[in-house]
Length: 441
Image 1 (cartoon, rainbow, N blue to C red):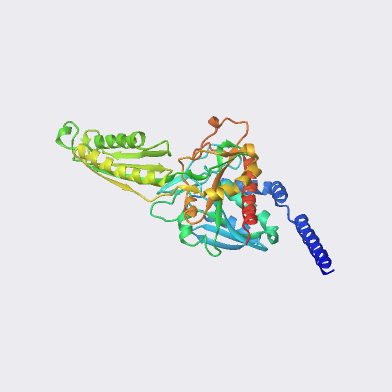
Image 2 (tube, one colour; image 1 turned 45 degrees about the vertical axis):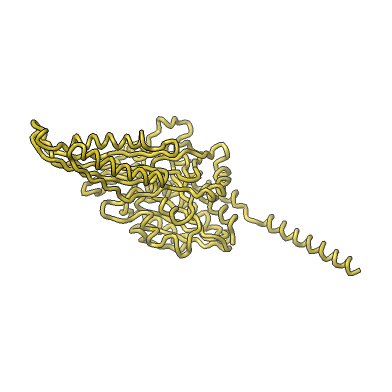
């Protein structure tokens, strides 16, 4: 009899547990449907924010009015807000109603010294000081869309914060394009000032809209997706003489020309390019004041792009050797200085594998692509040096346009199809929620 009672008790318990699980499943929040609906409902607001930022752009470390707009929005949502991080950065913290991990979502804020040529009603006419000169300013890289997207994600998720299984940090970062000479800033400074602490961020997601990728597409890659970037300078010292008798001195211009050629041979003949791409570019050459004087000095400046840490170390060593001995072969002296720059933008492979299904669901499997790395650089990499991160690209080009006809970033004709921001809204919101759902404590 006891066995029968015990069996009945176990059966009843299983029924009750099953009913409880079913009830929880039936009453669980439908995040995908909610995010899709909110994306459509918030879209006009997001477009309005984007157009405001586009019409009134601000340069790196000077995003004062931009920060005020973001701060006001986050405070209106009732978030915990901190300002003045890395000069003009803004952070909003949304604490969900359930325990779970802390997810960082990042958008960059700064514009570029570029004169806009795009014929749109909200085109920038802003002029500001840059390196002692008054220059036109334009959001020629899409950071205006990034900010608007993140403001939209903050609003849609705040509306249902009690359902969120964790905490979200909305990080609005200044000076991604690089700080003015002599100033600190950007992601590196935000990290130094503790942006990933209190509460401690577990993972971070960031996006970049692309003017040459069709709307609706998402591009991503495990491992290195964008290159490390380092500025370098070379000072070449010769001996001044009359231009009519070059044998009377040492010509630093000819020595510099050969240094430039030999630097390129490091890439074409001494670098294992089948492993990863690498680039050495000389962008500045200055020497001389008069046509018939061979000057005493010459100055070169350029950029190095690498996608592999070991390759970067090898490249630096070979550059020092090449510069020194090329100059000596002309009887000149040369000093190479390589400056700290942006690390490799490195997508944590485990995090990327975990979240790839989310990106495929958002864009559709046919529109989510694993792509080759690019030699552009991103200071999102400073966040990724501290915690696992995933950085990806969303399309901002009209779907019927040939990418060859689309103006590249950092140019006067740069154009973004605003419909592409919907993919960004859905991707950032779904990544945050999916990660928390998979890793709730």
